[in-house]
Amino acid sequence: MDINVLKTTAQAMVAPSKGILAADESTKTIQKRLEKIGVQSNPETNLAYRQMLFTTLGVEEFISGVILYDETIRQSIDGQPVPQYLQSKGILPGIKVDKGAVDMANFPGEKITEGLDGLRDRLAEYKELGAKFAKWRAVIAIGAGIPSDTCIESNAESLAQYAVLCQEQDIVPIVEPEVLMDGGHDLARCQEVTKKTLKAVFAKLTAHKAILEGMILKPNMVISGKESTVKAIASEIAKATVETFKEVVPAEVPGIVFLSGGQSPDEATENLAEINKIGGPWQLSYSYGRALQDEALTTWVGKEESVPTAQQAFYDRAQKVSQARSIKSV
Ligand code: 5MM
Image (cartoon, rainbow, N blue to C red; front, side, top):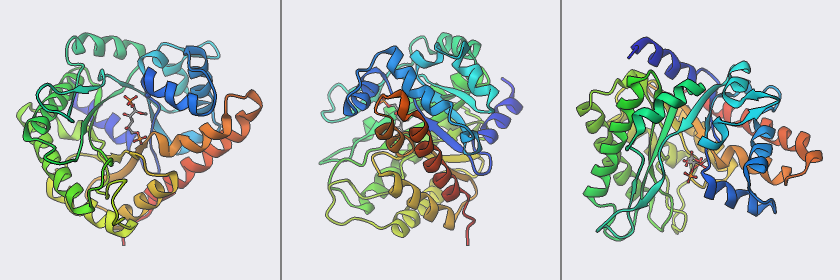
């Protein structure tokens, strides 16, 4: 393990004005996304869509890295393997290495993320293919009587095991414990669960001797549930988010890259701007999937002639999110 490589990569992932594009939709998820615009998902259409995003001129001003799915990391753009194509634009290639969240035995309504078996060998192969960082997503749901301590602890343990296996091979782990927005809970409940989850995650990372300077945290913002009758506004979300993170996220972590989690592109942009107005000891950036892609996706609709306007939509959103991430604290 080379700590300097880990630190340098982690810092490049959250370089000023930049953040990460999450384009690691699994087969089922990309199917759902393309179905919405009337396109049948297969390896060719999936690549056509992602190629539209990756070849957007100038987007590397705002995008430091792209999280790829196993299918995409093995594909090529203009005869060049995708990871090498991205690197030639100054974008770091990353890879989703978890195998998805499945129902947790004995804990109805809760999920555990799979993928630790054989992970060391898979990481070695991904490194060979060009991956500089990786991602593992754990999912924590809020509901009546959940999350349980067992769910939080088990997911935190897996995240930590994943993180150190990545670091062993100089791959920066993005540690993603996502507290879902689904449900009618309010901001305070989200704050309580997020705090508990992050505490557990950092306790496990410490127990496994993870290098905090060589990782990136990808959390949810502290936000009210989608069905909540009391919707928190951006300044409240920002205050609760930064307050929580200051309590539980060590300052050694170079960057926090938020997920959008079902927020609209405008909401995810505004909330990030408010968060940066407050600021903290870490870079406060983005690793959005839907909030960066939605407008481009619905403009593209699978048509070759729509590529320039879809790319413009993607560029414009990436620029707005980058501006939000660049606001200086007051
Ligand atoms: C792009 O979606 C990622 C993969 O999801 P599935 O395994 O469900 O297909 C997802 O992990 C994503 O990276 C994060 O949830 C952030 O995306 P959003 O859309 O929440 O910003």
